[in-house]
Image (cartoon, rainbow, N blue to C red; front, top):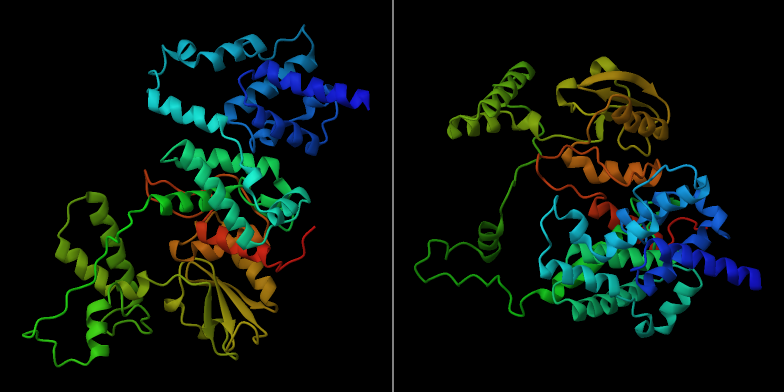
Length: 431
């Protein structure tokens, strides 16, 4: 028993020697995280990787610890990281502006204050309901109502420390929660961690904070009633509401190509629009006309295309197929069909697939084998397949085409919400 206590003290002191300014609450979570990884003695530090600590520490802090532990395990004769040692780590943490004054401007007092409150923030577990604490302590996933109550309590405490917490602050607090209760709060599906494992908590915390910061009075006001001289007074109420409230595209499902168009003319007009876009100077009326005439072939991006059960590859209307990988269902539905085809770039590449699962595998695998980006219209569906069924869960990056200088989320919020709902309702078996 004494040896275990000594080992625990050694682990704690080894962390404190490298990161002396680490708050006590984070230090406790670090100990629990290392124990969950199987670290029993300081000799086990050499097997710890930076990624193992990112759920609790910031990247620079994790790198300092790993570098120091590797240097210690290699012995004093080998200096693999000469610039990282306890003394320099201490100086970096205690006086960050002195070591970087020549490279970066000094942070403003407001930014420094925000960083300080996040480091000192402690999870208010004493305010958690007893039922929630039972789930957290036993490693069980809390039901959605208890999870929402936890978010409300934590967000309230955050706003007491800082009236307007940033998303970075929510991320750090979410890391603390997941680091302390990984089995109950980490984003996991079938044993695979989704993204970094704490994106759903960040999303919920930020949503709660944003709701608390909203104005009490609604910004959107009701429309004024129509005057007595309005031209629509004789229009029935249902039609009047339709005229007033309809917006966006109201005729999106075009079943046939315009009679004046062919597949070749559609491609020529689309190429012309690309050239006009690259040139940067164009006539808006001309672009509008081109967009309207090519809408039939522009809008469609779908996973499935249906044809008659007896049709062969030559009978399929290829001008209706999208350029992205698409499953051609030979029958009324994908559930009852006994034969499928696969098309890529508007061409049928496999005309005899016997099983639906095999067709899904081929369709999805085509995106990776041929390095095809996910179409924007199908990004949520394909990312759900990627993360839930194919267990491809990168911490960063996406296969969706994005605009330059546009921030891209690590995990699609819709996919994250669906996965969380599936786990909460125990749709699949859990360990």
